[in-house]
Image (cartoon, rainbow, N blue to C red):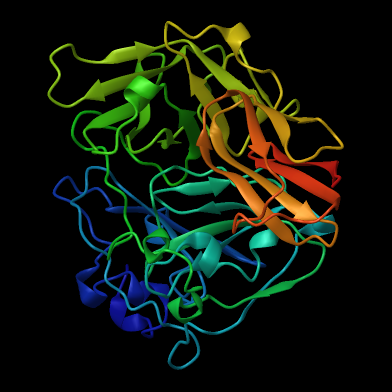
Length: 425
């Protein structure tokens, strides 16, 4: 029988028990356990607290301020805030303690769970020590994803942040150990808008609890969905949901053109299932709008294809482009490409052409032969399509640059592409 008096204050039996009225090991009125499981994964320390044959396991686990914990509770239990300082490490706990992250076997990707101990900050800023070695940053509410460490991050349009006490799952790719110290706001560059780093005091995006109702599980697969222009909203007054065989598996409040649905489909057999998206705007009388036509991003060809979502591929994330009735598949480029510039050599200006197989963040920049940035021509979200941009041989201050070799680089979710051009005067 569980007795909290048997556990020192740093052990899980105390931290997650009656301490601070947490009482995760209690039962509801139906004599069902509130708690299903607590799991952690920190370098070589992995474990699960669960009830086996009526007895809780691993209650002597030392709760460590560096760890992140996944807690799965019974959905019939009452909602409550988990209260704990999180500083159970050594004698007093230290949120600035350096964290050495060990590589996976043979440099393969590995997941670790960390505990975040700072004010709400942009994830890429807070994790800048190891950001170049990550392919996934994941919390309960949102995910940043990419295929390779040198790819561009795919992330929702909504400003989001890490928040104090949050478990952060990182997928780490490196051949050698790397050290992380959580960054603080004292290091934010003054030229950056602070709104990009601090979303609100909680750092939690609005949750879709108005129309679509689903049950959260202990893990999810992120779906990044590009919306047709007519569905884009910045007022949190509409929602998008994922249905599989008419069963709801996740939804999100719409903010911007790229939204993320947390799909709770891990471990579910959905072979040959009908997968569709449903849209709802609050206040409308017509009910849900169904989207059964969409394109799925093929990571091998870096283009959207007209195929169904294949969960047998075991991807860590999916990218989907919803199609409205007016969109023809042939209108969209099949591959994202930097198509070149004309004329080349040129004087005084040239036109750069590129094609986007998917909507997303696009950055087109000019560099000199030393690798120094000369001018940013494009830095915005653009829809899939074909584009041209003129460069008039000037820098970001609108001053003419000298003759010589220059490089132009296209950066999208498909990666980076670079070409060479020559300015003659």
